[in-house]
Length: 142
Image 1 (cartoon, rainbow, N blue to C red):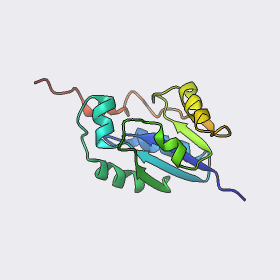
Image 2: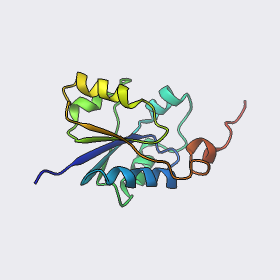
Image 3: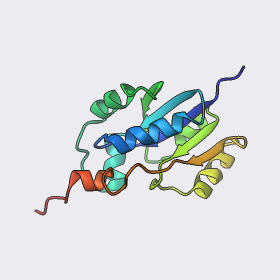
């Protein structure tokens, strides 16, 4: 019997109960959960800020979660979809507020010949409490 692999992406900076809920939901769509943790350079590029925790600290925290079978660091390059061609998976799990859209992910998967991959959008756990931007607080003003 084939193992169904789910892949999820995120910065997880800081890791909080909403992220853990997301990863539990992602795991429910398959047998094996592979999580790609954003590099520090990706956080700087996409979020326009310094990471609060280093990529190694975030990777260690994510891989320690019970739902996670494996966690790896994302690309060092600027192209966020490059790993889609390199990894083997059956389902892409997106967080409730995570960009890109399902349509964008489908387009990128199709461009890489990954036609049978499912895309799921996971629900939120109390986004009024567990959202990284809320938990981090306001950015310092210099």
